[in-house]
Image (tube, rainbow, N blue to C red; front, side):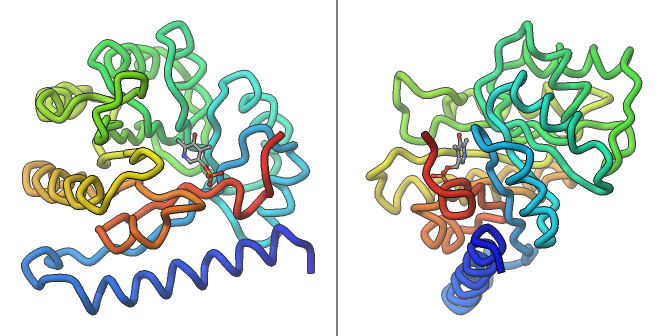
Amino acid sequence: MNEIKENIQKIKRQIAQAAETRIQTQMPSSNNRPNSITLLAVSKTKPSSAVEQAYQAGQRDFGENYVQEAIEKITTLSHLPHLCWHFIGPIQSNKTKQIAQHFNWVHSVDRAKIAQRLNAHLNTANQSNECQDTSLNICLQVNISEEASKSGIMVEDLFSLAEVVDNCDKLTLRGLMAIPEKNAGEASYKKMQHLFNQLQAQYPTVDTLSMGMSNDLAMAIKHGSTMVRVGTAIFGARA
Ligand SMILES: *Cc1c(COP(=O)(O)O)cnc(C)c1O
């Protein structure tokens, strides 16, 4: 068995374990809509051969941060059915057209202008992606640790951005994304879970809390994550 396949199986066991403790510890009130947990394999800086190995191990969802690099892989691997591509990096507005054309999900929307541009491009573009009909799945990135240097919208502006996205006809508001800072305490994760529950109560399309990476997967799942974005633990350290 190759290493990538072994790593994926190991992560899946960790996810299942963390999910069990979540079910045991969760308050009934916050468990009114139990969610499964999707593994998003973050393949940035890794070659398409690595993505293909993961695909052969059954992995279908992949996350990328850099538009040009991602499009090369998406094109190279377009013969593989049911691949689903997620854009998770910071977004420059001059890249929105390419992102709208090539990706199925965007996790890093943090301002209205970006949402509106993605939507406008979808209204003119021909979508040929397999795992979506015509709409682009959107998560709003929250700057939960309130770091000046980090991308993400501040909590006080989150719900007005949600409304903007919900009003875009080609965008489907799926949920929230966060990258809690390295030594963030449990409070940041709790806060995200609370915001997610609030958003879910307002919008029936919301079902995704994109939170947790190689090093904080268990903590994120404990606090309601439905999608973990794992790079290093699957593909190894990045150069
Ligand atoms: C790189 C990256 C990841 C993966 O991080 P690892 O620590 O390698 O698992 C997840 N999410 C985002 C937004 C990233 O940029």
